[in-house]
Length: 156
Length: 156
DNA sequence: TAGATAAGTTAGCCATGTCTAACTTTTGTC
DNA sequence: GACAAAAGTTAGACATGGCTAACTTATCTA
Image 1 (cartoon, chains in turn blue, green, yellow, orange):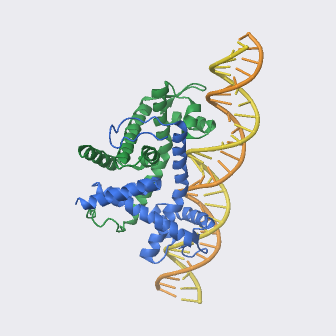
Image 2: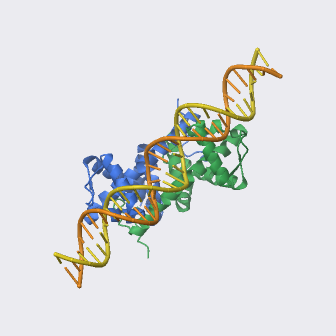
Image 3: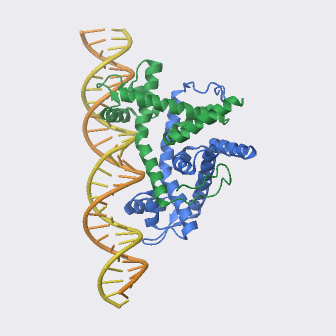
């Protein structure tokens, strides 16, 4: 049995959740952290291929704000995970499943950014916050963002 | 010079950001990750003290969904960081700065949850997503959430 | 085409946050 | 008060994702 929904009413009460539910929530967050690296990389790789024609470690390192060896190591993990295809010293390509993941991430990213902007948040902040937020947005919440976005178009 | 704001218009364009800005964004996310543990713990400790009278490792472990040794290790890190006060085998207390951090986190948490609920998201999902999202919400965005929340009260 | 420069890799280090197994301390009960 | 059960700690392992230093490969250019 689920709790009654308050939906906007008395919004600052502290909800007393069942310990297991809370634990599951934290587990979800930890899982999200594990996929963040992969998501950020494939998203960025797709972006680079589109705008630059190819994805190079040096560029990835610059955009991510990490050093080249970090990129090398992580790319080889992505390769092991079947998300990228590549030979040493060459540019990086996405496999089909990498492509798919990238597409989903970019879509989600765009929705989150657009949603934040629709609240009046400046684009730079929206982009920065989205980078962190997007990995923790469930399907349900993403849909709610999409809905709210539609509403905001209607009202403008 | 900052970009023109679109504020709801053409919300699905992919913004081409300066590499340094993008890198700074990712750095911010990495920093947020480093404070997440501390924030989750002090938030939970404050909650337990309030609802249970004291915060015990076994309870923290259960709520966080981790094993007791993990709690012991992390609590000692928090102690080193000056956020908690405690002797071995005893309950855990917050220092003044721990208290302060906990208060800020709980406030932020409540706002995020309330905001998500105001979009029509069910409470369980709101709680789960908030757990991950809250650590990546900037002051600007938190204020925007607060504003939107006020709006939603007016319209109900 | 040779040599310099840029790009990429390898090796090895570190901190974080998780775990299990084994041990110690505290608590509760007969 | 003794002893069993529960709570907490310690030791040691592991994966992740950063880093620097040193090396290799590719690219550019004189």
